[in-house]
Length: 404
Ligand SMILES: Cc1cc2nc3c(=O)[nH]c(=O)nc-3n(C[C@H](O)[C@H](O)[C@H](O)COP(=O)(O)OP(=O)(O)OC[C@H]3O[C@@H](n4cnc5c(N)ncnc54)[C@H](O)[C@@H]3O)c2cc1C
Image (cartoon, rainbow, N blue to C red; front, top):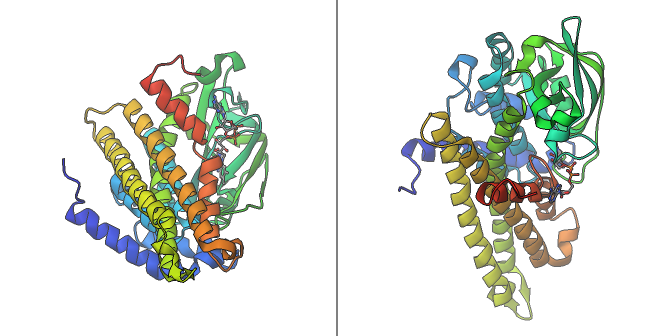
């Protein structure tokens, strides 16, 4: 057991930290206010080798580990605690990695080198209006007609659609579709890469629009209404009717990185809080001298350390799994769910506490902690598994399939 990062990992952490200080920190509030565009940052992230960090060098990736990806997600979230930049980063780690594992060579060779250059996007389109948690019950139908899969249905929350439409190549979504009867549930699920724009040409058969969000407003989330949208059969991931496991694998790795992003925003909020409680004098003393505040600071700092250990362990397990060492996909699912559960709930608790320390001024936009809290909230209410679903995963792993 060794709790130290290797020299290479520590240098990598420092380089991402410096990158964040220089290129992200000065813009994060403007990004959240819509006065600065993520598209202006993407070329820099690509230059830094961060987009598709874990992809093969064959596709322009950096061949980094998931532990390095977790380290980077935390640092990017520290620089942009509203979470827009880390969300972009982590989605472009998890879902392109799944494409690299399960797509045909021709698709990988076409899309992934454009993605690592910052010219293409790959996201996830899973959630549907009847309930995103029950993936086995999804209804978006894919039918093979004249050599093309035609998609009909609605994905009501997918991040990055309008980004894909604005990037030069375009991009697509690992899309969960039904290719058999509803009764077959997850045994009739197929994952395919539905391209909203390919090689500069926008696809047909869909409508989209972005929502107005409360937080993390630098990265848009919108809906996809699919009305016969075509997918080339080469863009199926894995086998027809065998897509459920592929989607779950993507969620498993994404969750660990979400946990890492939650660490970064929690760390930033705690630091803001510490500076404030030291300097804020009420009843003649700095409020940090009151134990109801300083003990809470100590407790949250301890939870931050604990959550980081869980996140790192989940990333380390993923690295072992992908190196073919003796780790099962269930180990990753369990560790990823635990990591997201702990770290996201910590970020929410830190945000609420630090806002209380700031008192009334936290309610006004001049105090950026609330902006960070709203970013963390996106991962508390949803995205890659609502918090109860993480409990369901852990309970099923530890107790058994009877857990509902
Ligand atoms: C900012 C943002 C971005 C998003 N981006 C994407 C994206 O890119 N792609 C995508 O596919 N989706 C995306 N989502 C959607 C997200 O993944 C879903 O919100 C999430 O999976 C939960 O689905 P739901 O909101 O439909 O909630 P529901 O499934 O309707 O669940 C509602 C509540 O019931 C609880 N619940 C459900 N089942 C159980 C159970 N068995 N036991 C106990 N409690 C249960 C859940 O925990 C939740 O609290 C995004 C969401 C947000 C907020």
